[in-house]
Figure 1 (cartoon, protein in one colour):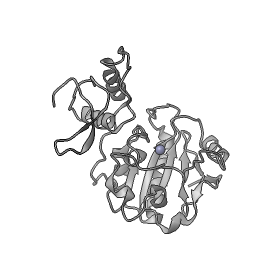
Figure 2 (figure 1 turned 90 degrees about the vertical axis):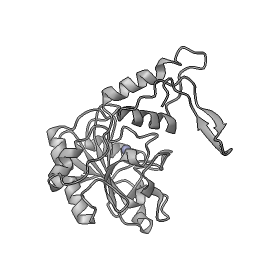
Figure 3 (figure 1 turned 135 degrees about the horizontal axis):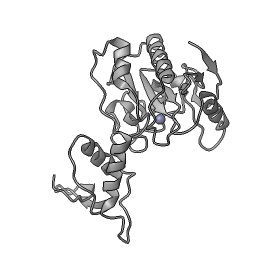
Length: 257
Ligand SMILES: [Zn+2]
C-alpha cells in the first residue's frame, strides 16, 4: 500500500496511555484530494480549531497519513447526546485516544457522494491493514472494539459523517459478510424529505422553523428513517417536567405516537 506522510501536530501524543480499539470512518464534506486535506489539517496547527485524522483516502485512491497511529488525532470532537454508550466508559472521556480515524474525500457537503471504485478499494485495503496491525475487530463496533462511523460518537453534529459508505461490501470484503450489519444511514433524499417535513408547519410563523441541532430532532429523524413518522413539529422545544417533577425538554408533533 502506498501511503504519503504529511504529518501535523494536532494530536494527543501517545494517546495519553490508551490503545486504539475502534476504527472510525469519516467523510470530508468538501475538498478534492487527500493531499489538499492533509495540507488543510497542517494549516490548522496552532489555530483556534486544529483538526486532523490518521488517514485520508481520496477519489483517486491516493492515501495520505496526517497523524501517527501511536498518537490520538484531533478528529472526533466530543461525544454528544445519543452517542454509543462505550465512548466515555473506562474513565476515558476522549474518544480520540481510543480510535484510529480514516477520512474519505467527498466533494458533496452532506457527504452524499458515493465512493469511487478506486477510493473503495483503497479504503477497504487500508481498513484491513489497520485492523490487523492493531488487533481491532473487523466487525461493526460494540463495547469491545470494531469499526463504526463518526456519527456514533457525535450524532448531534455529525449524523452525516461518513454519510454514504458501502458498509455491507466492507464486511463482505473483510470476512465474507458473516457479521451483523450496521444501522442504516439515511440517504440524501431521506434527509431532504425529512427536513422539508420538519420545516413545513412552523416556517411561516413569527418564531420561524424549529431548530434541528437538538437531540429531539435526531430521535425524530431516526424514527422517521425506520418507518415511524410523528409528523412535523408544531411547537419548538420547551422546558417542562415529567410526572415525577424532573425537568425535561419536550416538543409537540402533529401525529400521535
Ligand atoms: Zn467525521
